[in-house]
Amino acid sequence: MTSTTYTLTHDNLNALLRALVAAGKQLHAPQRVGPKVFFKPVNDAATIVFDYVQTAESPKSLLFPKAEFLVSYRQNSEGMVVTDHLQKEIPEMILFGSRPCDAAALSRFVQFFADGHADAMVTQRRRALTIISMSCIASDPACFCTSCGSSPGDTTGSDLLLTPISNGRYLVDVVTEKGQSLVAANEALFEQAPTIVKDSYLATVEAVFTPEEITKRLATSFNDPIWKNASLRCIGCGACAYVCPTCSCFTIEDEGNDRTGDRLRCWDSCAFALFTVHTTGHNPRPTQTERWRQRVMHKFSYLPETNHFLGCVGCGRCSRACPADMNLKEQIIAIAELLPAIG
Amino acid sequence: MENTYKPYLMRIERAIDEAPGVKTFRLAFANDDDRARFSFKTGQFGEYSVFGEGESTFCIASSPTRDGYIECTFRQAGRVTSALARKEEGDTIGFRGPYGNIFPIEAWTGKNLLFVAGGIALPPLRSVIWNALDLRSNFKDITVLYGARSVADLVYKQELDEWGKRSDMKLVTTVDPGGETADWKGSVGFVPAVLEKMAPSPENTIAIVCGPPVMIKYTFPVLEKFNFTPDQIFTTLENRMKCGVGKCGRCTVGPVYVCKDGPVFTYRQLQSLPAEY
Image (cartoon, rainbow over all chains, first blue to last red; front, side, top):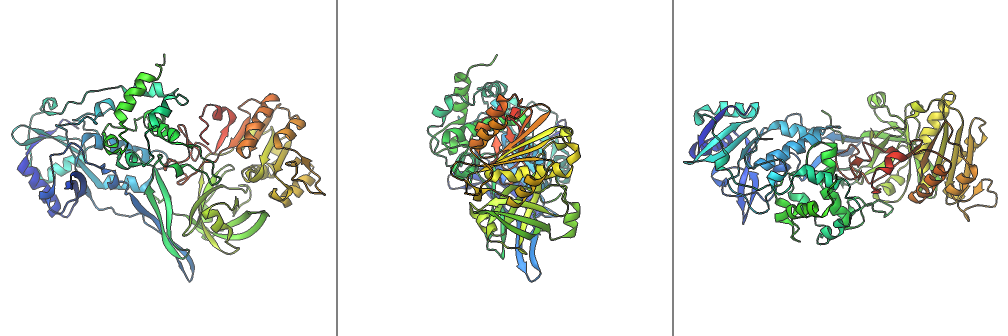
């Protein structure tokens, strides 16, 4: 459906965002908090920022909150009553300003939760969400989307993709029917335009490895000594998983007492020592070496094998967030150099 | 779509002290509709919960041939199992499941079944054993070798007596050296050593093995010595779990999820996996 394109002026984009807020839609867009930019609910469209390379956190919490209620329970005179938190109707949400890598990540994220035993909460929220992404006209050294199957103008996963072109205008790629209906509902703001080749307006992100090659090399790397060196700096803080747009591991915990309380699902990370430890004290991943290997293998070897997509889109957030300065892009390049090529 | 995480409410119909720190609960569905729509197959597991404490993962230890209830056997060890152990007959707990794959018992029709279990790992095999005994004519010889550290640590003592008296199966029980009592009539020795003395034939036989890692480690080589192929040997794995349905990312062994690709694996499958369990 990428054939229909429109242009939109910056003023009309602001008008669109204001109209969405005025219509009571839950709009989430990049806003400045201190020196960083985060996706936050918008009350005033004037607070939305446009001059950022990447937000500090990914937008995945719109589909998968950091903590959410699964069930609540209450003991009454009849016995225990368990109530469901699965909503029948999810209010419409709009995500504005996600980068193409984030939209690509969310599509893989949703695919993972929909495959096999489908997760009602995540799939339901995606249905309620419209994604208006913004192409990248700038990148930073942590970016490596073009090595992970995405690119600065990738439409994958977005409903609409805006690309800043000349004269304060945006080229609008209509990617899905949902995107088309958003345009149709605000028709006066958009101008039909011939398809424009976007490439000259986009940031250049050099491809530094081919994912298929990495996946192939990792297949036989499990016992390779590279993991020891690669993981030496890791302090197991889990910041990488927290900011990652595809990391989906979680824990389930109860809060309350034996009579009343809630069961919650909360983000978790394979970087934590307690993640896999058995009650006996036995831990299948006893040191940070095994945990770091799991993180890399899961994203670049296991997910391509089992789910047919890479668990990384090269957004670079983990490298920017790591307090020990572990850079995933550099690590993968080093793996490509160190691991023997497989015939 | 349904909320996977909403548990069934289960009433504890019977609570049995099996061994020091080990209990069995027979659980009945508090809601008749839940009971009517619930079914499981041998080898599957569930998430058992104490409200306010959390969920814990155990196999379903009863046979699917026994309708209307499920049983679980657990050792009091952590927060949830300690809270479970304080529950009594008549109390309500949560359960969700069944999850995971199954022992392919239908494919074993006409074969000899050799069960090898150690300690608290008899419960998953007990489900298969009763399943096979309840369909006795489908199988040829049924042999059970079960060992524990001491006589007191043997679980399902009453059922062991019953199995020992049956003429249509063979039961060998053993305890680790020093674990025997004055009136102990079974073997004394570690499970792999006792198995070696039994010299099992691989002819038309499936071996189903479950036990602590050290028992497994020394049992597989014994079976291989007697020419069991890795396809003839089945086991069931355990790893820390939360969701039970292949999402939370905790129980993975390489690309495999113990919860949805297992918990039942052949030794051949294990050979292709990293030892992250």
